[in-house]
Image 1 (tube, rainbow, N blue to C red):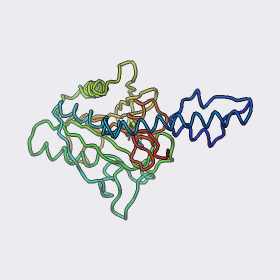
Image 2: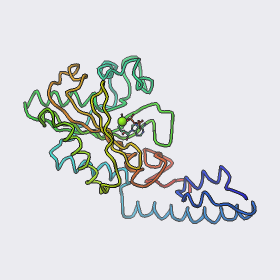
Image 3: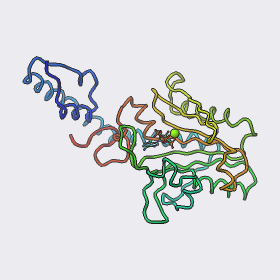
Length: 280
Ligand code: ATP
Ligand code: MG
């Protein structure tokens, strides 16, 4: 029995072919290659169709619309969108205790001795929410959506540059209600995206160092992580009230919703657009 070659399998995966197709077996190499040529032609047609549809009707990739849907939901919940720099300082990172002993520290892209590309949105959001609260003395609800950068060992679920949406509310719930509020936000986010309740899971993890964290998982894939305070990091930032925050991975969400196994099709790219390869 003959199976598709590695190169043929890569092409089938790039073109979004099914697992059933990838698993097919053949009597002869000739038969295999002829089936491959036929199937490739069909898949290319489909990809071309989807790209045409994107340009003619959709005008927005699924990743963009996942981000926009979450933004609209948050604005409906009275959150305000903020935009902060992608380049942060070593001092900011150190306040997250991402020093040389932290696992993330090896993943940081350094620009020079004092500056790096942010691996997360939290440091900037800590500062902005603290200042807004100081000025208003009211609860503060803000979010940011933007690129984060991490050196990753390049699995199918990680990219060096990805889009995070981080929402956080400060002094918005009484102490003791943070976990409930975080779960409420997580459920509301999934509802906004039209993810049915049986299609995702909230996985709570207790950690003596970090307190409780809640991950949202779709088919076992982590698409978001939430945490809350008072938190041991807070005093570093001059934050003393309760807070609740969730960070969503936009491409992870898009990939999970598309039932895809490869994140790169949904990220910033010059080889894919909206899940479709440009190499067709
Ligand atoms: P993982 O354990 O999957 O590497 P993480 O727990 O380190 O993720 P968080 O710091 O919790 O990631 O970031 C919040 C969300 O951002 C994650 O739930 C995930 O959806 C997304 N994310 C994190 N790292 C990446 C990456 N390298 N590429 C794409 N998305 C990412
Ligand atoms: Mg996480």
